[in-house]
Image (cartoon, rainbow over all chains, first blue to last red; front, top):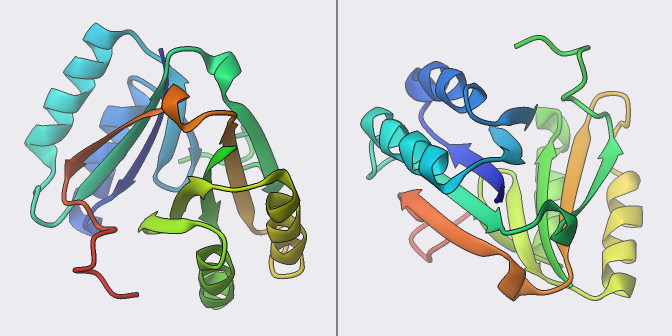
Length: 87
Length: 87
């Protein structure tokens, strides 16, 4: 399935979340990831993310689409996920 | 169509972008909006957004799905779009 993941978490936990998400998905913008992922791998990502976040302070939202082709992506302005940004 | 909009823009332009996006979509998380919108209204939003951003510094990404039902949404942790957050 195709997933878009956005997180809004406290600064002190961002680095760990960033590192985790980059193991499963593609960073495309500040706090935003996308990519193809299997249900098993997504479950693994979520359970690992739950060990990082504080559920009363942090928020992760996942948008899941069975097919990437059902989602049309448009970038306006500067496309940050290119190799010109090293994070 | 159903749209997810994420932006990553310089601090000094965030307020204007936030105000604009809230006229068309629902704020769900820091820099993230979603909602049903017509092609005409989306075009209007994009052209107004382009008057705000600096394309060489700022980035807006739109994910468009013809049907909301093709997108399954999952929130982990704190759901920020409830009325408990006033922005």
